Length: 355
Image 1 (cartoon, rainbow, N blue to C red):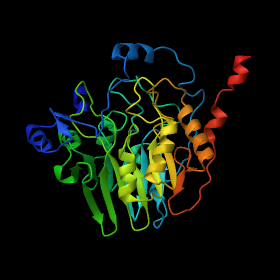
Image 2 (cartoon, rainbow, N blue to C red):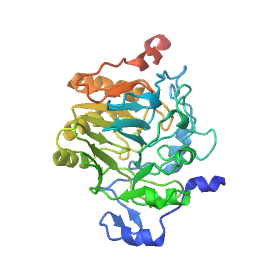
Image 3 (cartoon, rainbow, N blue to C red):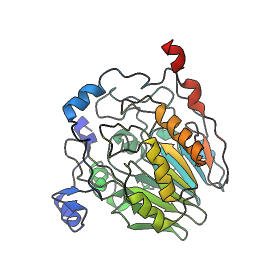
């Protein structure tokens, strides 16, 4: 397939007509629940891009990101587990079913080769390491969440794709069977079994793989099993939707929340560490897994800052924060977890450097 194929396909007229029946679709675009400018007041894209490509300290690790090599194909049949692979890619095995969320295993988060390369050590895991995937969940169509090369390697007759409105058009264009794809809007449900259900829930973000934004929807998910209630956050800035989700679903056993790639110049579409803590309170989460960090440089903050600040704030608030290494298992049935603060050993000694 050609380079242009990887950009996917915009929704066709039939889909757009259906989208037009929804209040969140206006003037040919999906909308957030509250006003969400792309940039902060007074900022512009030209200035932002110029500053992005300037030299910023510590945005890339000086040494390989550590990982744990787990045999994913031989996990214990009865366990419920979660495994994170850097950034926003993670694997779930729950109620005997396997889930893969936003997998990006091509080593790149951009259509331009070598432009947004994965940090050394963060890209050990590849499609061949995985068992058969029952459900592939896609939160939105950005390149760092919907990776064409990875998706094509995952293509088979068994895996079911669960995605938000408009994203299915990409999969169909890439040759996936429409019968394998379920696309929904916020607050709609997909029942996967007697005690297994997914609900699409709002997020505050945007979409697009090219110049046109918001042709498809972005989402978070609530995954409920007989014994677990999980919030799978996707990308989102802080907004009123977190409280609403918390009120509708009550206490979450675990919330997966993005905590990296933020910037004061685009403060509405990603969450800052202090907002992650607020979100966890409003979701009524017993514990959180911070993601969207430690694999790609998408902003100008130090690579370790999101995890360090989220971890520190959570400790101060008495909130259980899970910090596994890439590939390290999280036992979802366990009431307590113990993970190392592995990134601290890789942080520069700022005081020493300033002397």
